Length: 336
View (cartoon, rainbow, N blue to C red):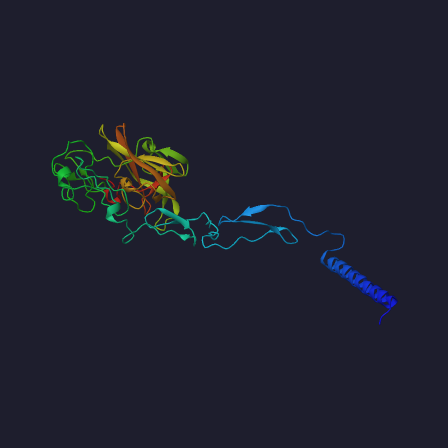
């Protein structure tokens, strides 16, 4: 049988064991916290903020950096679109004289307008047949017919037109002239009423380029030196072998040809360019003599005559008000 003293001793030992275990727990907890929290830094406490997600839910800040928790994935989330593409500002000239630029996303040049054998399709031409006038200049695009004839437009050209002394059509390629007119032949190849003069030359105020400077066309004479081109297109000094003056009717009109670099000349519609085609067939936007045509309008001409000259060069060309033109005169007619 245990005595009271032994019982008291057993209770004291139990108390010591309990206190020792409590001490160990306290020390272990302190060590654990010291390992989780950096020295000198208190545990993170995040602000009570919320971010609205695309699906309507909200998330708060969390973690040691207090970043917003990720939103729940949704099937309706729109992925970011592609970055816009910016192409360089370059241009390419098309066979019809127009220009196209580079287009995204590949930045290749845009396709040129549809052409057939280098010409704009007939649908691009403007048909003015039926407006009551048999017109010589109706083409608005490369490859378009540039004159109405009795065959192509009988309602405008079959009936006799008012007998103004002007060209009613071109007969350069063998086309038939409208009723009441006749083909003038060289050098104009226009359809004029019988007996009319065929003014196809330069305006009276035109200046011609010479080695001595600009000289008015009315002051030129046989033997005067002018600038011209040889057969290879080289600029040379040439001698005038013929000059011409043609009376102009009161209602005569001339083409005011204007180029993009500021040069301008007034010349009869059928006067030849350096390559032989009539000035009236030059289209706005086309390249000619190193620049782009900005205007080729018909304007009234109030002078009594038009003028021309013929250099003795292989080309017969000359510069009129700074623009290269051909001559309406021919070497075979010298002395007539």
